[in-house]
Image (cartoon, rainbow, N blue to C red; front, side, top):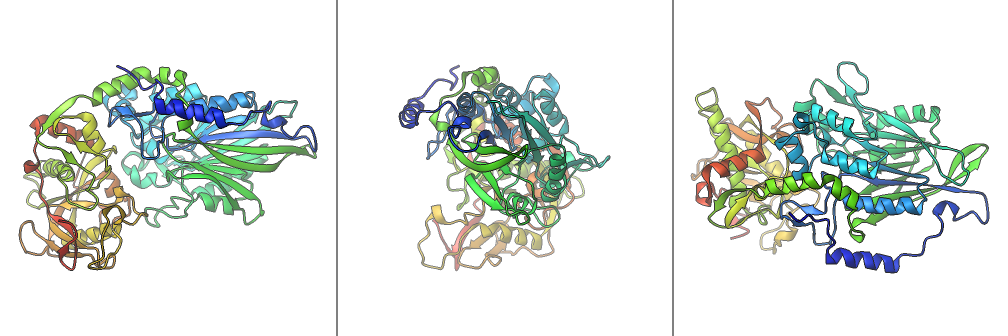
Length: 597
């Protein structure tokens, strides 16, 4: 099988353009100010985040080289080339490489070695450990998705790394002590006769793990406030000799949360910089944003804290440069800046490609297995504003699974509803052969299936909350489907529901949009006190997205992965035919008039 390690024409053009426009490098940035003024040195900190299992520049769902509308590239193999170039530029002195988390989940490659051939059973080295060890990171912070596959797999992955994994605010529930290494202090050789520089690196993971992976961590770990944890450890690191303190934090900088007030803030990076003195810089992630350089003033010291977020998937590499001088026998940061490097300007590092080649090839072979034949093409492109057969396929499988499990029991006579979100607008079941990659492309997350009981009133409240996804359009105003949604609400936080019929009136204010909610195929309204079983994924049921009423004790939870259930259903049927599952039951309206045909 041909791997994507070869150079595409676009890659070659990008490399040529970069070479033609790049300035000639001097001996190294640490020597740049040597001829005049005080003697200075430079520390360079490189950072990635939210790599999400991307090693090769490869789209496993399309079985092709990755590309998007902006011609981004992805993967640690690309990142490795940039890091190698910068290390050479720095004469392999004064350079640290960090990652801010969400590393071992996100592609079929990492799913394969968590589910199909789990490293916990085979003992094989995880592909992300292989890639990161070749690159020789200095530290990685645990992101919330590190906990998706349970603590045994996470612990093994950490042991396979040749560098520390940090999470200061993840606490062992039994002992009250840190469950993982909180921080490291690295001795850095700046070269050119400089005294040693001691860099403290503190890792902070996301408190949302307590909700999102409750099944894996409840009773085992607790997750403390990221701000309070930074305030605790930064003085300790300084007291133990850290000349510079850099945080690697898996939390955005907006100060908001996707869950309620029961847990500490999900995205506190700017607040950490503002409230905790003694921090020089923060590499952060979680929100998948590209923030090249942002300074936040610390309210206590007046110092500028440098922060940077390097997008996602290995598309970008943060570069932070610190200019340092010696004053009174101590190090002082005299200047600091960050830039963002694009991995589409380089080719893949052959060492990283080689390290993961066999695992990549095995994954590609797996996802190209045929599971069924589809009688027609089913696409998800319109699923965020229209009821589509491909999303009903998810709801059908979930409904059948829960109904069969509950048959003959206490809840066997209750109607079963199901909720599904349009995770990927690119998902397609082609007419003809449907492969595992097609099904995986529809359901890109490693969620498991659960079920709870909701009342009719709770069902309506749930749908009202979901309907905030849409902007408001007065009757008669043209509606462009590509600009119909609130851009602050991601597609994965818009749920559609099967098993009831309903209208969403996008001319109404948020909270007043469910203008029709009836039993299927009838005009009979759903009663507020009626009881329903609702099939739901574990992320949503545990509070992900902060939907109302859904955080309840499960009446069904067999730890079955939804993606695998979709694959199994297709294999069992052999044929995917919309007439077996498509029930158009919801629509967007304005004053009762459908928005779309």
